[in-house]
Image 1 (cartoon, rainbow, N blue to C red):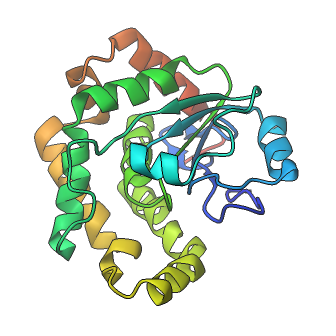
Image 2 (cartoon, one colour):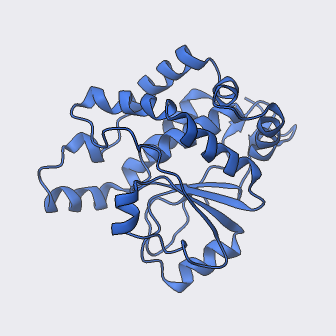
Length: 236
């Protein structure tokens, strides 16, 4: 099951099961999500039962203070706040600006280095999230899937799942605040595809990108191993 049916989030999903050469991405290790705000006890129990003990909050300090994470003070979780857009304009002015903002996130070198060091060193399952699990979360997820060797069409599909799971919350948000541009809350395949093109032109591969922000080769190898399960039963 890719999407976790939690009561308080709509876009919490496993990155396992995507094809890679000779295998697939591993289930139960890496999860992307919208913000875990107001989680009831059963949601907390479900996360702990799945072994998800490391949480990375990619939101701004203002967002975190206004809408605190339910796991931040819970003793069962290791909570890390890493503002991925500390020096960036949060809301793009145009549709073209969305993809540009994705690439600008990769230029936040200290934040990216910290995020991937946390992921590489985590002992249990890792959940990373922003507000709705589309942009900041989508960039981190795309880099992880690229590192694993997931084909591009699967990367695009993973990004676009947010359109289905967050459709109703996005509709309600736009009704509440009609000044928010539609393109800010609605994923389009062109956003992530343009980002991937720029990423590959600038860095080549996800491994080269991680090296460029200071992740040691040994940690990259370990992370790649954790990302995948190799089996001769997978063919593509």
